[in-house]
Length: 345
Ligand SMILES: NC(=O)C1=CN([C@@H]2O[C@H](COP(=O)(O)OP(=O)(O)OC[C@H]3O[C@@H](n4cnc5c(N)ncnc54)[C@H](OP(=O)(O)O)[C@@H]3O)[C@@H](O)[C@H]2O)C=CC1
Ligand SMILES: CC(=O)N[C@@H](CCC(=O)OP(=O)(O)O)C(=O)O
Image 1: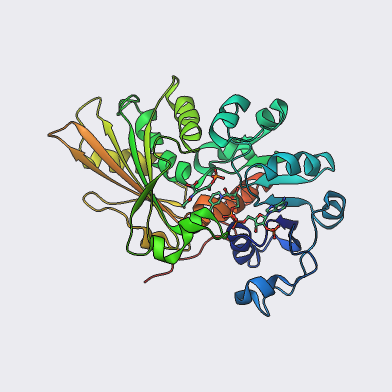
Image 2: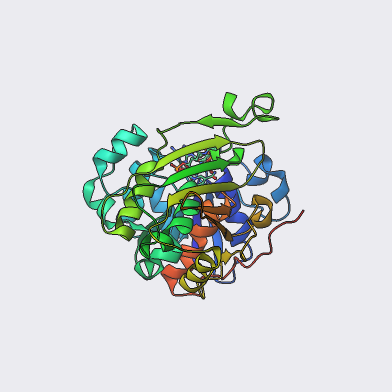
Protein backbone atom coordinates (compact mmCIF):
# COMPACT_ATOMS: atom_id res chain seq x y z
CA UNK A 1 0.00 0.00 0.00
CA UNK A 2 1.53 3.31 -1.12
CA UNK A 3 1.01 6.13 1.32
CA UNK A 4 1.42 9.93 1.13
CA UNK A 5 1.43 12.29 4.11
CA UNK A 6 0.32 15.92 3.83
CA UNK A 7 1.45 18.01 6.80
CA UNK A 8 4.46 15.72 7.14
CA UNK A 9 6.43 18.57 8.72
CA UNK A 10 4.05 18.78 11.69
CA UNK A 11 4.03 16.70 14.87
CA UNK A 12 1.19 14.46 13.66
CA UNK A 13 2.88 13.95 10.28
CA UNK A 14 6.30 13.15 11.66
CA UNK A 15 4.75 10.65 14.10
CA UNK A 16 3.01 8.97 11.16
CA UNK A 17 6.45 8.61 9.57
CA UNK A 18 7.93 7.08 12.77
CA UNK A 19 5.34 4.29 12.78
CA UNK A 20 4.75 3.80 9.03
CA UNK A 21 8.46 3.29 8.32
CA UNK A 22 8.15 -0.07 10.14
CA UNK A 23 4.65 -0.99 8.90
CA UNK A 24 4.94 -4.21 6.85
CA UNK A 25 2.03 -3.34 4.55
CA UNK A 26 3.04 0.24 3.79
CA UNK A 27 5.52 2.15 1.69
CA UNK A 28 5.80 5.92 2.22
CA UNK A 29 5.96 7.26 -1.34
CA UNK A 30 5.46 10.98 -0.74
CA UNK A 31 5.96 13.37 2.17
CA UNK A 32 4.29 16.67 1.44
CA UNK A 33 4.70 20.25 2.62
CA UNK A 34 2.95 23.46 1.58
CA UNK A 35 5.80 25.69 2.72
CA UNK A 36 9.00 23.63 2.28
CA UNK A 37 8.58 21.69 -0.99
CA UNK A 38 11.95 20.75 -2.49
CA UNK A 39 13.73 20.62 0.87
CA UNK A 40 14.79 17.44 2.64
CA UNK A 41 12.47 16.41 5.49
CA UNK A 42 15.55 15.71 7.62
CA UNK A 43 16.52 19.39 7.35
CA UNK A 44 13.62 20.25 9.65
CA UNK A 45 13.74 16.97 11.59
CA UNK A 46 17.38 15.86 11.98
CA UNK A 47 16.24 12.77 13.96
CA UNK A 48 15.16 11.40 10.54
CA UNK A 49 18.70 11.77 9.13
CA UNK A 50 19.71 8.64 7.16
CA UNK A 51 16.30 7.10 7.98
CA UNK A 52 14.00 8.93 5.59
CA UNK A 53 15.96 10.60 2.81
CA UNK A 54 12.90 11.97 1.03
CA UNK A 55 12.58 15.42 -0.46
CA UNK A 56 9.29 17.12 0.36
CA UNK A 57 6.72 17.25 -2.43
CA UNK A 58 4.30 20.16 -2.95
CA UNK A 59 0.54 19.94 -2.44
CA UNK A 60 -0.63 18.58 -5.81
CA UNK A 61 -3.58 16.12 -5.79
CA UNK A 62 -2.76 14.73 -9.28
CA UNK A 63 0.84 14.03 -8.25
CA UNK A 64 -0.38 12.40 -5.03
CA UNK A 65 -2.71 10.17 -7.05
CA UNK A 66 0.22 9.14 -9.27
CA UNK A 67 2.34 8.25 -6.24
CA UNK A 68 -0.05 6.88 -3.61
CA UNK A 69 -3.22 4.93 -2.83
CA UNK A 70 -3.95 6.46 0.56
CA UNK A 71 -3.26 9.96 1.89
CA UNK A 72 -3.05 10.98 5.53
CA UNK A 73 -3.93 14.67 5.89
CA UNK A 74 -2.28 15.88 9.10
CA UNK A 75 -3.25 19.43 8.31
CA UNK A 76 -4.77 22.26 10.38
CA UNK A 77 -8.50 22.75 10.67
CA UNK A 78 -9.74 24.85 7.78
CA UNK A 79 -7.03 23.45 5.47
CA UNK A 80 -8.45 19.90 5.40
CA UNK A 81 -11.93 21.25 4.54
CA UNK A 82 -10.58 22.53 1.22
CA UNK A 83 -7.96 19.86 0.48
CA UNK A 84 -9.78 16.60 1.26
CA UNK A 85 -12.53 17.02 -1.41
CA UNK A 86 -9.81 17.42 -4.06
CA UNK A 87 -8.08 14.22 -2.92
CA UNK A 88 -11.31 12.22 -2.87
CA UNK A 89 -12.19 13.61 -6.30
CA UNK A 90 -9.03 12.13 -7.87
CA UNK A 91 -9.84 8.73 -6.33
CA UNK A 92 -7.53 8.68 -3.32
CA UNK A 93 -8.47 7.15 0.02
CA UNK A 94 -8.14 9.72 2.79
CA UNK A 95 -7.61 9.57 6.55
CA UNK A 96 -7.93 13.10 7.92
CA UNK A 97 -6.46 13.96 11.32
CA UNK A 98 -8.06 17.40 11.69
CA UNK A 99 -11.36 18.36 13.28
CA UNK A 100 -12.89 19.37 9.92
CA UNK A 101 -14.99 16.26 9.29
CA UNK A 102 -15.76 14.94 12.76
CA UNK A 103 -18.96 16.87 13.41
CA UNK A 104 -21.99 15.88 11.37
CA UNK A 105 -23.51 19.36 11.69
CA UNK A 106 -21.90 22.13 9.62
CA UNK A 107 -23.52 24.71 11.92
CA UNK A 108 -21.92 23.14 14.98
CA UNK A 109 -18.57 23.09 13.19
CA UNK A 110 -18.83 26.77 12.30
CA UNK A 111 -19.85 27.64 15.86
CA UNK A 112 -16.98 25.81 17.58
CA UNK A 113 -14.19 25.99 14.97
CA UNK A 114 -14.97 29.46 13.56
CA UNK A 115 -14.30 28.22 10.01
CA UNK A 116 -16.56 27.63 7.05
CA UNK A 117 -17.74 23.98 7.17
CA UNK A 118 -17.15 21.36 4.48
CA UNK A 119 -20.10 20.49 2.20
CA UNK A 120 -22.86 18.62 4.08
CA UNK A 121 -22.56 15.47 1.94
CA UNK A 122 -18.87 15.15 2.82
CA UNK A 123 -19.58 15.61 6.53
CA UNK A 124 -22.11 12.78 6.24
CA UNK A 125 -19.83 10.49 4.24
CA UNK A 126 -16.84 10.80 6.60
CA UNK A 127 -16.70 7.79 8.93
CA UNK A 128 -15.67 8.74 12.48
CA UNK A 129 -12.74 6.48 13.30
CA UNK A 130 -12.85 5.91 17.04
CA UNK A 131 -11.34 2.50 16.38
CA UNK A 132 -12.64 0.56 19.39
CA UNK A 133 -16.22 1.82 18.89
CA UNK A 134 -16.65 2.25 15.16
CA UNK A 135 -13.97 -0.12 13.84
CA UNK A 136 -16.54 -2.16 11.87
CA UNK A 137 -17.79 1.01 10.12
CA UNK A 138 -14.38 1.92 8.70
CA UNK A 139 -13.80 -1.42 6.92
CA UNK A 140 -13.47 -0.74 3.20
CA UNK A 141 -14.54 2.92 3.29
CA UNK A 142 -12.61 5.55 1.30
CA UNK A 143 -12.73 8.38 3.85
CA UNK A 144 -12.09 8.34 7.60
CA UNK A 145 -12.19 11.27 9.99
CA UNK A 146 -9.77 10.53 12.82
CA UNK A 147 -11.00 11.51 16.31
CA UNK A 148 -9.55 14.34 18.38
CA UNK A 149 -7.03 13.63 21.11
CA UNK A 150 -9.15 14.61 24.12
CA UNK A 151 -12.28 12.90 22.68
CA UNK A 152 -10.34 9.65 22.23
CA UNK A 153 -9.34 9.56 25.91
CA UNK A 154 -12.74 10.77 27.16
CA UNK A 155 -14.91 8.53 24.98
CA UNK A 156 -12.97 5.31 25.54
CA UNK A 157 -13.25 6.06 29.27
CA UNK A 158 -16.95 6.97 29.41
CA UNK A 159 -18.50 4.84 26.66
CA UNK A 160 -18.97 1.43 28.33
CA UNK A 161 -20.43 2.84 31.60
CA UNK A 162 -22.84 5.11 29.71
CA UNK A 163 -23.89 2.35 27.32
CA UNK A 164 -24.55 0.00 30.26
CA UNK A 165 -26.71 2.66 31.94
CA UNK A 166 -24.45 2.72 35.02
CA UNK A 167 -23.88 6.51 34.95
CA UNK A 168 -26.22 9.47 34.60
CA UNK A 169 -25.66 11.10 31.19
CA UNK A 170 -26.57 14.53 32.60
CA UNK A 171 -23.93 14.48 35.31
CA UNK A 172 -20.66 14.07 33.39
CA UNK A 173 -17.67 16.30 34.15
CA UNK A 174 -14.40 15.85 32.25
CA UNK A 175 -11.18 17.35 33.53
CA UNK A 176 -8.65 17.16 30.67
CA UNK A 177 -4.91 17.78 30.79
CA UNK A 178 -2.58 17.80 27.79
CA UNK A 179 1.10 18.01 26.98
CA UNK A 180 2.22 20.89 24.78
CA UNK A 181 2.76 18.86 21.58
CA UNK A 182 -1.06 18.79 21.36
CA UNK A 183 -0.85 22.36 20.09
CA UNK A 184 1.36 21.35 17.13
CA UNK A 185 4.87 22.51 16.16
CA UNK A 186 3.98 26.13 15.50
CA UNK A 187 5.55 28.51 17.96
CA UNK A 188 3.53 31.05 19.93
CA UNK A 189 3.24 32.37 23.45
CA UNK A 190 1.30 29.27 24.55
CA UNK A 191 4.21 26.96 23.79
CA UNK A 192 6.97 29.34 24.96
CA UNK A 193 9.14 27.48 27.52
CA UNK A 194 8.94 30.22 30.13
CA UNK A 195 5.14 30.23 29.89
CA UNK A 196 4.59 26.48 30.32
CA UNK A 197 7.46 25.31 32.51
CA UNK A 198 6.48 25.03 36.21
CA UNK A 199 2.95 25.96 35.21
CA UNK A 200 -0.48 24.34 35.01
CA UNK A 201 -2.83 26.45 32.95
CA UNK A 202 -6.54 26.11 32.12
CA UNK A 203 -7.56 27.17 28.62
CA UNK A 204 -10.71 27.28 26.42
CA UNK A 205 -12.83 26.61 29.53
CA UNK A 206 -16.36 25.67 28.34
CA UNK A 207 -15.28 26.79 24.85
CA UNK A 208 -13.20 23.87 23.65
CA UNK A 209 -13.90 22.62 20.09
CA UNK A 210 -13.86 19.01 21.34
CA UNK A 211 -17.04 19.51 23.42
CA UNK A 212 -19.47 18.93 20.51
CA UNK A 213 -17.41 15.95 19.28
CA UNK A 214 -17.59 14.28 22.70
CA UNK A 215 -21.32 15.03 23.01
CA UNK A 216 -22.06 13.77 19.48
CA UNK A 217 -20.59 10.34 20.25
CA UNK A 218 -22.02 10.11 23.78
CA UNK A 219 -25.46 10.85 22.32
CA UNK A 220 -24.97 8.00 19.86
CA UNK A 221 -23.94 5.67 22.70
CA UNK A 222 -26.68 6.82 25.12
CA UNK A 223 -29.52 7.14 22.57
CA UNK A 224 -30.43 10.64 23.77
CA UNK A 225 -28.70 14.03 24.04
CA UNK A 226 -25.83 14.33 26.50
CA UNK A 227 -24.15 17.54 27.67
CA UNK A 228 -20.77 17.56 29.40
CA UNK A 229 -18.72 20.03 31.39
CA UNK A 230 -15.21 19.92 29.91
CA UNK A 231 -12.20 21.82 31.21
CA UNK A 232 -8.82 21.61 29.50
CA UNK A 233 -5.42 22.32 31.03
CA UNK A 234 -1.98 22.74 29.51
CA UNK A 235 0.67 20.84 31.48
CA UNK A 236 4.47 21.17 31.38
CA UNK A 237 5.08 17.91 29.54
CA UNK A 238 5.76 17.15 25.89
CA UNK A 239 3.27 14.32 25.29
CA UNK A 240 0.30 12.86 27.09
CA UNK A 241 -3.36 13.40 27.86
CA UNK A 242 -5.17 12.55 31.05
CA UNK A 243 -8.94 12.80 31.32
CA UNK A 244 -10.25 12.54 34.87
CA UNK A 245 -14.02 12.07 34.60
CA UNK A 246 -16.77 12.21 37.17
CA UNK A 247 -20.36 10.97 36.92
CA UNK A 248 -23.28 10.18 39.18
CA UNK A 249 -23.97 6.44 39.53
CA UNK A 250 -27.40 5.06 38.62
CA UNK A 251 -27.04 2.08 40.96
CA UNK A 252 -24.80 0.41 43.47
CA UNK A 253 -21.56 -0.60 41.80
CA UNK A 254 -18.07 -1.30 43.12
CA UNK A 255 -14.64 -0.80 41.56
CA UNK A 256 -14.45 -4.47 40.61
CA UNK A 257 -17.78 -4.17 38.72
CA UNK A 258 -16.26 -1.43 36.55
CA UNK A 259 -13.09 -3.44 35.98
CA UNK A 260 -15.21 -6.39 34.86
CA UNK A 261 -17.54 -4.32 32.64
CA UNK A 262 -14.67 -2.59 30.84
CA UNK A 263 -12.55 -5.75 30.56
CA UNK A 264 -15.47 -7.52 28.89
CA UNK A 265 -16.32 -4.54 26.68
CA UNK A 266 -12.76 -4.15 25.40
CA UNK A 267 -11.93 -7.87 25.28
CA UNK A 268 -9.76 -8.52 22.24
CA UNK A 269 -9.04 -4.80 21.71
CA UNK A 270 -5.33 -4.78 22.40
CA UNK A 271 -4.86 -1.04 22.72
CA UNK A 272 -7.25 -0.51 25.63
CA UNK A 273 -5.81 -1.70 28.93
CA UNK A 274 -8.10 -1.79 31.96
CA UNK A 275 -6.35 -1.20 35.29
CA UNK A 276 -6.78 -3.65 38.16
CA UNK A 277 -8.98 -2.48 41.02
CA UNK A 278 -7.36 0.22 43.18
CA UNK A 279 -4.73 1.32 40.62
CA UNK A 280 -4.84 4.29 38.26
CA UNK A 281 -2.97 5.03 35.05
CA UNK A 282 -0.34 7.73 34.47
CA UNK A 283 0.59 9.39 31.16
CA UNK A 284 4.15 8.03 31.26
CA UNK A 285 2.78 4.49 31.16
CA UNK A 286 1.51 4.99 27.59
CA UNK A 287 4.24 7.39 26.35
CA UNK A 288 5.09 6.89 22.68
CA UNK A 289 2.54 4.06 22.33
CA UNK A 290 -0.96 3.50 20.97
CA UNK A 291 -2.37 2.36 24.31
CA UNK A 292 -5.24 3.90 26.22
CA UNK A 293 -5.15 2.91 29.91
CA UNK A 294 -8.27 3.28 32.06
CA UNK A 295 -8.80 3.07 35.86
CA UNK A 296 -11.75 3.59 38.22
CA UNK A 297 -12.71 4.63 41.72
CA UNK A 298 -16.27 4.39 43.00
CA UNK A 299 -17.04 6.79 45.85
CA UNK A 300 -19.85 5.30 47.94
CA UNK A 301 -20.12 8.58 49.93
CA UNK A 302 -21.01 10.74 46.92
CA UNK A 303 -22.50 7.98 44.72
CA UNK A 304 -20.10 9.07 41.99
CA UNK A 305 -17.51 7.21 39.97
CA UNK A 306 -14.16 8.70 38.94
CA UNK A 307 -12.86 7.30 35.65
CA UNK A 308 -9.26 8.10 34.67
CA UNK A 309 -8.09 7.59 31.11
CA UNK A 310 -4.65 8.30 29.60
CA UNK A 311 -3.24 8.31 26.07
CA UNK A 312 -0.26 9.71 24.19
CA UNK A 313 -1.90 12.59 22.29
CA UNK A 314 0.34 12.23 19.23
CA UNK A 315 -0.10 8.43 19.02
CA UNK A 316 -3.52 7.10 20.12
CA UNK A 317 -4.74 10.73 19.94
CA UNK A 318 -3.55 11.23 16.33
CA UNK A 319 -1.05 9.24 14.22
CA UNK A 320 -1.38 5.86 15.96
CA UNK A 321 -5.15 5.77 15.79
CA UNK A 322 -4.97 6.97 12.16
CA UNK A 323 -2.79 3.94 11.34
CA UNK A 324 -5.10 1.67 13.38
CA UNK A 325 -7.88 3.00 11.14
CA UNK A 326 -5.83 2.30 8.01
CA UNK A 327 -5.40 -1.27 9.26
CA UNK A 328 -9.14 -1.64 9.89
CA UNK A 329 -9.99 0.02 6.57
CA UNK A 330 -7.78 -2.48 4.74
CA UNK A 331 -8.98 -5.51 6.71
CA UNK A 332 -5.54 -5.98 8.31
CA UNK A 333 -4.93 -6.82 11.98
CA UNK A 334 -5.55 -3.51 13.77
CA UNK A 335 -2.22 -3.74 15.62
CA UNK A 336 -0.08 -4.02 12.46
CA UNK A 337 2.89 -1.65 12.73
CA UNK A 338 1.72 -0.35 16.10
CA UNK A 339 2.80 -2.97 18.64
CA UNK A 340 5.36 -0.87 20.48
CA UNK A 341 6.03 -0.95 24.18
CA UNK A 342 5.62 2.52 25.77
CA UNK A 343 8.88 4.41 26.35
CA UNK A 344 9.77 4.21 30.07
CA UNK A 345 11.07 5.99 32.06
N1 LIG B 1 -0.71 17.34 17.87
C1 LIG B 1 -1.65 16.55 18.35
O1 LIG B 1 -1.52 15.96 19.44
C2 LIG B 1 -2.93 16.34 17.59
C3 LIG B 1 -3.22 17.00 16.42
N2 LIG B 1 -4.42 16.79 15.79
C4 LIG B 1 -4.76 17.48 14.56
O2 LIG B 1 -3.92 17.00 13.51
C5 LIG B 1 -3.62 18.04 12.59
C6 LIG B 1 -2.10 18.21 12.54
O3 LIG B 1 -1.65 18.55 13.84
P1 LIG B 1 -0.13 18.81 14.20
O4 LIG B 1 0.74 17.93 13.40
O5 LIG B 1 -0.02 18.79 15.67
O6 LIG B 1 0.04 20.31 13.70
P2 LIG B 1 1.37 21.06 13.26
O7 LIG B 1 1.07 22.50 13.38
O8 LIG B 1 2.55 20.51 13.99
O9 LIG B 1 1.50 20.66 11.73
C7 LIG B 1 0.55 20.99 10.76
C8 LIG B 1 1.21 20.92 9.42
O10 LIG B 1 0.26 21.28 8.40
C9 LIG B 1 0.97 21.84 7.30
N3 LIG B 1 0.15 22.83 6.60
C10 LIG B 1 -0.21 24.06 7.03
N4 LIG B 1 -0.94 24.69 6.10
C11 LIG B 1 -1.04 23.83 5.05
C12 LIG B 1 -1.69 23.89 3.78
N5 LIG B 1 -2.38 24.98 3.40
N6 LIG B 1 -1.61 22.83 2.95
C13 LIG B 1 -0.91 21.72 3.32
N7 LIG B 1 -0.28 21.62 4.52
C14 LIG B 1 -0.34 22.65 5.37
C15 LIG B 1 2.21 22.50 7.92
O11 LIG B 1 3.36 22.12 7.19
P3 LIG B 1 3.91 22.82 5.88
O12 LIG B 1 3.83 24.30 6.08
O13 LIG B 1 5.28 22.30 5.79
O14 LIG B 1 2.99 22.31 4.82
C16 LIG B 1 2.37 21.90 9.30
O15 LIG B 1 3.58 21.22 9.46
C17 LIG B 1 -4.34 19.29 13.10
O16 LIG B 1 -5.57 19.41 12.48
C18 LIG B 1 -4.51 18.99 14.59
O17 LIG B 1 -5.57 19.70 15.14
C19 LIG B 1 -5.32 15.87 16.22
C20 LIG B 1 -5.08 15.16 17.35
C21 LIG B 1 -3.88 15.38 18.16
C1 LIG C 1 -2.53 21.38 23.97
C2 LIG C 1 -3.46 21.88 22.90
O1 LIG C 1 -3.51 23.05 22.60
N1 LIG C 1 -4.21 20.97 22.29
C3 LIG C 1 -5.11 21.31 21.26
C4 LIG C 1 -5.57 20.08 20.57
C5 LIG C 1 -5.98 20.51 19.20
C6 LIG C 1 -6.39 19.48 18.27
O2 LIG C 1 -5.94 18.38 18.27
O3 LIG C 1 -7.29 19.97 17.47
P1 LIG C 1 -8.43 19.22 16.68
O4 LIG C 1 -8.56 17.89 17.33
O5 LIG C 1 -9.61 20.07 16.87
O6 LIG C 1 -7.95 19.08 15.32
C7 LIG C 1 -6.33 22.07 21.80
O7 LIG C 1 -6.68 21.87 22.95
O8 LIG C 1 -6.97 22.80 21.02
